[in-house]
Length: 439
Image: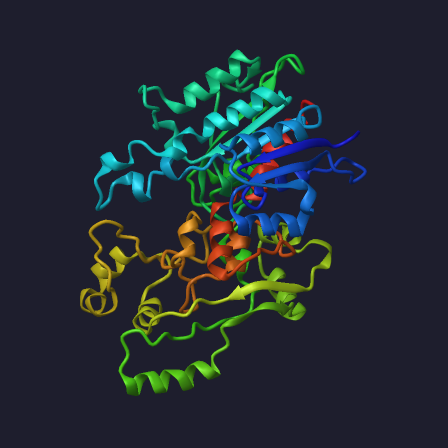
């Protein structure tokens, strides 16, 4: 069959559409194909263009008439599927909307709250057969200026235009999923909304089938009996990557210490933007991990890709490096302060009265905690489990389930932002697989 064409709105680097493009038929032909990706961030657009070509990328603000008009003109009659991770900062349960240290009134109204309306209006013009939306859990409680829940308003509008959102299992019109349940080495809860145009197929929305389970659950054996695999751990996902050391910044150091640090930094290997794969190291790692990990890495390494890109450690203050060494895997700043109050007074410089997990050393044996765009600023919530540094862009990309041949444009800070904002492709693949059952 001819691949169904996709319009990816608020595309970021295209994680949502990538998951759909991973779906193949028995002859290895793609069932879905990206037709257009729309994005405002220039670095994300550079990433998209390098992967898909200039023609498929519309760079610009979807709220501007000329951009919306171009999208509709190019996609109407050509696109069967519209996907979108509607910008979610104002819906988020952490950060500004949480009101920590800020006046919460300021964040009750945000211009990003109306972006869902522009998504809706473009869908109304193009009339695709399938709609798929991903968002943070905060959208479940977010209201518009009239006090209506945004999620109910969005679904209701689409229903008026002939879309069905009822799930085949329970009739619910959205689902909350955890990415770890679909083979992503990350605990990331998100709301998924899928709509099917009734005039195309008058069916309920197929359920998204879980593939992995938390091995620590009391009823874990039941999941195992049903053929599910244990979660992919952080160690399994990134343990083969070259060992790195963070260079030390000169912040807060005396003149004498700066000189010593400069000499030390000259001997430090903090990574490179492209490193040739150490096949022996990779083979040893993949032979030591579970079936879950093996399947994940086989997906991560497509077509024998022989390089590791963007594996560069951030530079850190000396006190941060000492803190990273002192923390135990799985500990947060709060845990460390309780265990070592004197050391924490010396090593922790931030006030801890808002986010007590301002620092978090990840656990090797479990999926990582939720990756987010704040990685652009610092990686203190993503301290490597046995190296005194925060994660690299490539490690973040793997945690988000991007294949190793997926490279990102821009400086490292912008790479982190693109990766943190993305939808994990393996989660999107699970959504696409559910849709395939009705094709």
